[in-house]
Each structure stands twice: as structure tokens, then as C-alpha cells.
Amino acid sequence: MSKKETEQKEEVIIDVAASLTKAEAFVENNKKIITYVVAGVLVLVAGYFGFTKLYLEPLEREAQLELFKAQENLDRDSLRLALNGDGVSMGFLEIAEEYSWTKAGNLSRYYAGVCYLQLGEYEDAIRQMDKFSTSDPVFKVLTNGVIADAFLELNQPKEALEYYNKAVNASDNEFVVPFYLKKAGMLAEEQGKLKEARRYFERLKNEFPKSQHALDAEKFLARIDAKEMNSK
Image 1 (tube, rainbow, N blue to C red):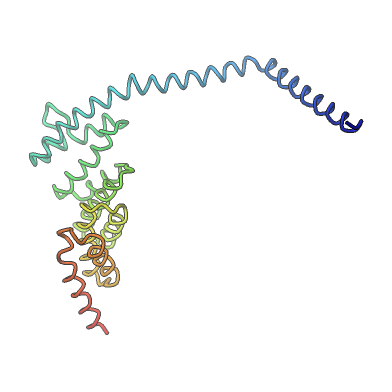
Image 2 (image 1 turned 60 degrees about the horizontal axis):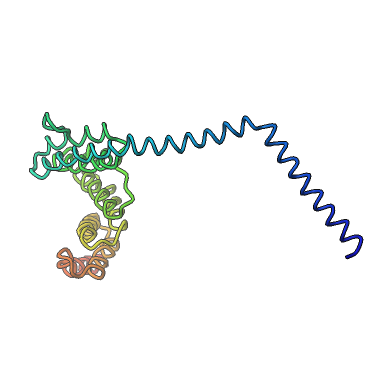
């Protein structure tokens, strides 16, 4: 080994040793701060698991029980009781407020929106659906669909079509998407947006041929053909 290589290796060793010495000095000089930081992290981690296990999980179970009772009223078409409670059990609105940190509390907002839509209180339906958050594709379809229906009832077809479009593009679910494709197509046609209507009906026909909502797709497309011919 040459003298130059030996000197370079010695320099590397010296640099590493110096770095270690600096690190040791930093730890020594900041021992209290480092201890506090580590302790703080441990407390945060312990607090998170304690909060989840001792608070959130029991709260979630309570919320689920209340949600089940409110759903029973909804199933009986007792919409006001489902929304506001029956004096014994909570309604969706109270569940959403009292258990806002839980999944059941969040889901209650969706059900409240559905109730308001059926009661004809369309602005409240939109407000509740806006508060509901979900990453589930099917719920995204349904939520946007309810908002679209509410806007349509409020005589706001532009906004309704916008949300129908969001609904049909949120998922490829064969049970819920065809329903809103048909609605979107019919509204687009009614608004004179024939090319847009055609896209909805063609998707309904081609992607969901077994759906009952696709049975009239050919008829809708033929009607659009006739309208386009007459407009030339």
C-alpha cells in the first residue's frame, strides 16, 4: 500500500472518530432535551392507544347501538323519529352530533340526508350529505346521487347533472350505477345536451346490459338519434 493511500485511510478514521466524538458530545450536552423528546413520543404513542382502546372503541359500540335503533325507525318509514329520536333512543342527528368521532356518527349523517330527501327538505339533505365523508365507492355513488336528486327537486338541473355525473363516475358497481346513469341521461336529454345524454345511455347499454335500467337504453338512444336528425 502506498504512503498516500495509508494517509487517506488514516484521515478517514480520524474523521469518523471526530464525528463520533461530536455526536457523543451532542448527546451529552443535550441529554435532558433528548430525554424529554423521547419521553414525549412515548407518551403520545401510549396516549393514542389509550385514547383508542379506552375511549373511542367503547364510544363506537355505543354509537352502533344507537344507530341500529334509528335504522329500525327508518325501516318503518318513521322518518321524523329516525331523524330526531323517539324519546328513548337517539335519532340520526343526535348520533351524528354526540358521536361525531365515530364511524357510526359519520354514517348517521348519510342516513339523515336520506331522511331529509324523503321528507322534501332538500337543502338539509344536501347539507347532511356534504358533512358525510367516505372512501367507499358505492357510498360515493349514493351520496352524490342523493345530492343530485335534491338539486333536481330544487329546480337546479345544472347542479343536479353535475352530481349525477360524479355519482356514475365514482364506481362501476352494477347495482347502483345503472340507476344514476339512466337519471343522468334523461336529465341531460331534457336539458338539450344530447351528446352527453348519448354517452350516459351508451354506457348503460354497453357496460350494464343485464340491469333492468338498461332495458330502455335502446329506446332512449333511438330518441336521441331522431332529435339529432331533426336538428340538422
